[in-house]
Amino acid sequence: MTEKPVKNKKKIKRHGISVLFVHWAAAISTFALIFSGLGQLPLYKRYMLDQLPGLSWLSDYSVTLSIHYWAATVLIFAIAYHIVFHGIRRDFDMLPRRGDMKESVQIIMAVFGFGKEPENDKYLAEQRLAYAFIGVSLLILLLTGIIKALKNLPYINFSEGFIFWITQLHNAGTFLIIIGVVIHLGAFIFKENWPMLPGIFTGKIDLEYARRRHSIWYNRVFVKKR
Image 1: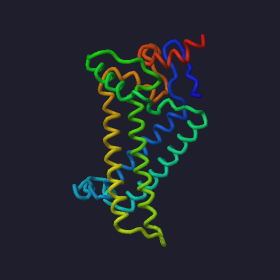
Image 2: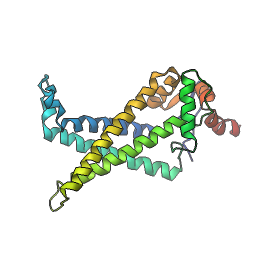
Image 3: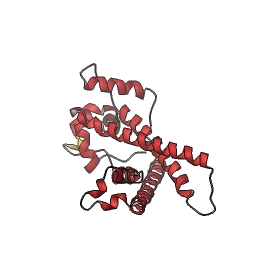
Image 4: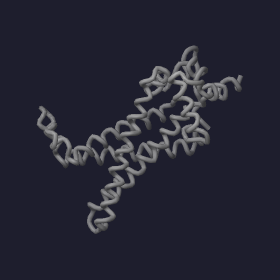
């Protein structure tokens, strides 16, 4: 079961409040995690960014650590809410499907003028793959982050070798997240993807765009119900 889209003369509802909440909670907390995590390396002190007016706190480990923990808390809540909400509703439109890799190549080639796009569902094949990539990367980041936080508690001891590899995985997860975010945002360089932008803020997209580019979803939700 998915959220019921609402159609008017020019717009169609693509995302409900819950989806928008999870998207922005995850996006803001992820950026905060990356920002505060880099501050703990400490990159900001090394490159003297903390010397800029009003930014001396960038090199304060206690401040960046607090930001890191609060951002992680928000992200964990958003992910848990996302899993429970969509699990209860049996809404699995974002999960990758067989053939998504092939369809993603076709979509990218079509953007550059080579060939024709396949018919698309509510989400493009490349969006489903990006969802899986970012989702796995976030899980790596959070699981390793929780272990790194636990090692600071009394009576909890991990071997140095174990923590070393957990730290490497945590750093790798951070790198993967940055790559995923860059690719995700980079998709909007192409004009064909611009009509999806309003949906990120309002939950609604252009009706004709949905009919043209997301025909499988449009026909399933509206045409068959007439």
